[in-house]
Length: 247
Image (cartoon, rainbow, N blue to C red; front, side, top):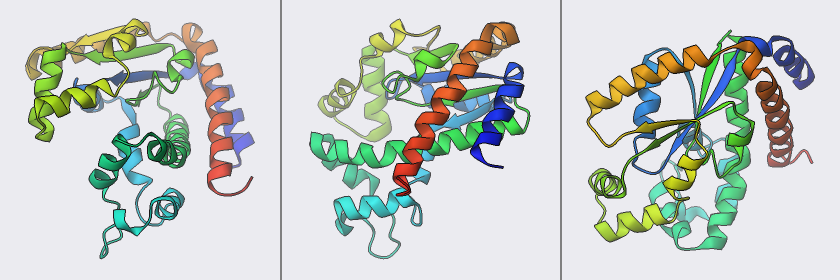
């Protein structure tokens, strides 16, 4: 099935499905919400998992990274990318970060698109697009529903310190390097307050699933999904052609 046939299928069947966005800040609990949604039967397209997949040996993005950054960032025995080592370098170097993103982002977008298509072909009526850069990449503009998971600054810092073994200063610096969570909250259609316990978050996710199911109507989301499919397919197709040296 070529890309034209896939797009035709999506357009013919678009009224039967919805794509919602899920995002948050580092250590706000986005991944926890994503996992809880998956356990409740929703299909998740996880950008973080995809980002790890596309840097595995054999992927075109992996080859381009070795060319751009050299073998020092790859394990001599397994060839695996040392994500921590590379991350520490690009965090403090804007030009290297730009080069990294120019390789990773097209590859990630293409894999995201393929997963969306797979779920649609399998008959999914609701897909969750889980990505930390949902707002920054502009996807919120073409999605009917955007969920932002948030917590207070001090809670976020403490969680990041505990999770990654960082000092308070380093944790604050990592958070400051991202788009402020309050900016993301301003663009949300649904906010998930994750200042409490895991049990409280489970209850909020139950309520979220009920709300998503009640919001889902073909007429309400039809235009948004048409725009999503067309916009993503054109961006993803162009990015993938460049990545695979076709154009």
